[in-house]
Image (cartoon, rainbow, N blue to C red; front, top):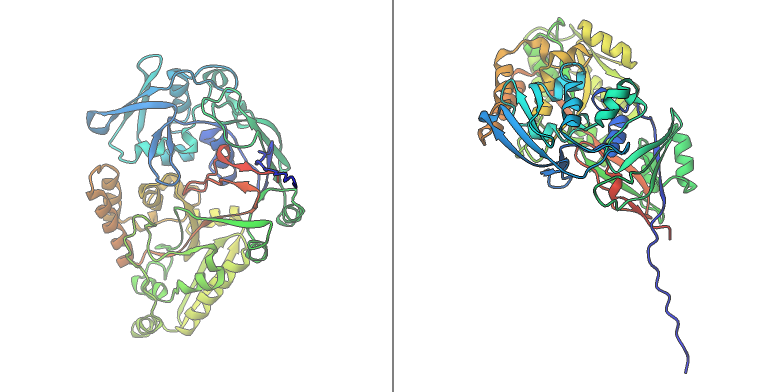
Length: 489
């Protein structure tokens, strides 16, 4: 009788995942960082009081096991998890939480935006802390899941606070093993981590140009990479070895008018230019790599309310009836050159020309763009914003924030619309279901006043080798590497 031999193959988890990054982190001190690369690294080095479940967008316990709201939302008490250690061997306690927040209140741009009303943080026991707010803030719990809310070792803060930007000390799933700025960064699993790590032992970030990373990826020397070239992604996504990960982000790419500009302050001109914008250009040029934005609020808050006012006939009629035909000259500035975005704006410029408007498209370097925004030296400006936390407040408040405007973010501050400001601030203090209706009133006001044109929503796009499994990312684009595995066969 013939004998049959059965070979059963079990997946072998790889010791390392190689990640191709176009730009490395700038600063690994949680409150000081605010760029996507730094946020990605910080989120995997540190834990926070609460955890954002990526798929359900629900807040779950993390370093805090429970919490209570007191004094009508002005005081929050958190009870901390016992047995948690930082990668320097010190234990989590109330002092670490207090120092992590007190050192940043009112000192960093991100903190001013994300934690606007933290008045004080106090120890009320070795393993309990109390946050005292200056006014009610309904999305407060969500802000505690942001990278800026990371809890740092008290010992590291007291002994080497200035060195935290290069030497992070957290209690997250990984610790920083090495960092050659602009070249390579290595994370290793934290032996002190309080949760079970399902992912690889090491995450190795290779930092370089798109072409270099693309070559390494095709040679299978990278397991995944940030994809910026749609043509390359289209070529590789359906191959035998490679695939594409795509996730819509809570974000908004938009065009805003400048009321200090001769034509930007004119509501008729704003309406005409809004009606000349065709959201279909984004779909045609970018395909499925971005989402069209028909309104300000992304899913799940939009409720199918469309802001699409495209009508060249109405636009031209408005311009001619007010004697503006051939007289309007206005510029649209945007930061950094993007060939596909340039094509979208070229289509917009041609549509404007047909309606008797000279729309000049100007691409600027980041520093020059910020300078012109601060000086008010533009007619229209394009900007992009990924929410810091999954709440409408993180979309609406930056649109009226003085602090962010002074950093060079074009928003609606210059319109000095006190009704709009009151609506957005009122929504911050509302805990009931009425809150979403307040935001929709604010959205309606912006639409009727023609302050802003929604353009698109960003997607997190990653090319990856099919041996990589369990890619988990939240709607702000943060990847949880501790859940990612790689089959070597």
